[in-house]
Amino acid sequence: MNFSKNFTFEELIVTEQPYPNYPSGEYEVMNLFYLSNYLLQPIRDKFNALKINSGYRSEKVNSVIGSKPLSQHRSGAAADFVPVDANIETVFDWCVKNLIFGQCILETRNDVQLIHISLVRLNKPNQEAFMSPDKDTYIPYKPILNV
Image (cartoon, rainbow, N blue to C red):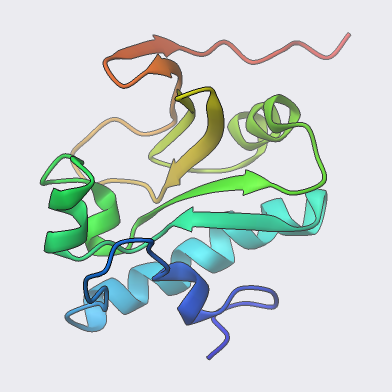
């Protein structure tokens, strides 16, 4: 089932873990729809193919990978991805400057970079942009100025 022009439901629930990973209700499915249309699709339109590493996460999958229990992935409101044909720092900078999001984080884990992006959050700060060189460090990101 397509959620947007280029993203399917199946892409947004992908996991490498050997556990069921299906949304438990309409709320999670609705968030995946908004995530794909308002964040992922504009990035795809600008930079072409994206590889989704993680979108929705079931409680078991989230726990096994060591993510925070209240991660926005649990509600289908966040995705981790890698651009296929574009420089990841350029994509990250564009996201920060052009999208409305909750958090946008350029993460480095075991020498692998990915971008985490989430829908806006109620009663929490939004437009939070960070660079995370390891799982415990978050450095506020200052966008690159166009000169």
